[in-house]
Amino acid sequence: MMTLTYIYADSTAVLGPLATFSEPHSYDLCEKHSARLTVPNGWNVIRQAIDESDSGPSEDDLMAIADAVREVAQTSANPSEPHVAPQSHSSVGRRGHLRAVPS
Image (tube, rainbow, N blue to C red; front, side, top):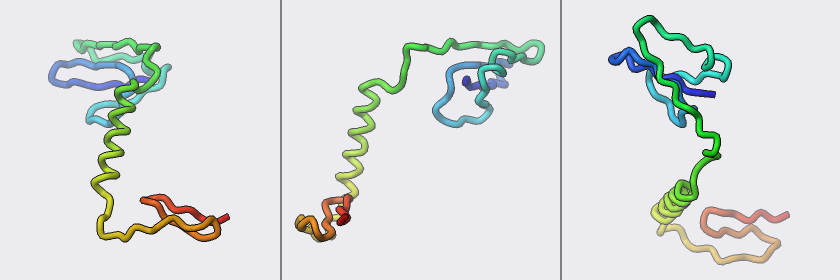
């Protein structure tokens, strides 16, 4: 899959790797349609190659996500909620946002 983006002011169509977010004037195309793309006379097509070695988010990307989740968890903790001490396995206990449900 590839994303097609039109830049009307430059009379250009850009065909590149699948976008991770929605943007006006962009369309996701399957492999068949991206290979057969034609544009109006006078327009240019920029075809960006897909990097096959790029297999997903980098370690830095994953650490940034983990840090953001930790930060949200720390700031959204409700200080007015009483702390519940851990209970035995036969009853329901609460630790933070997780709940233990008896089997």
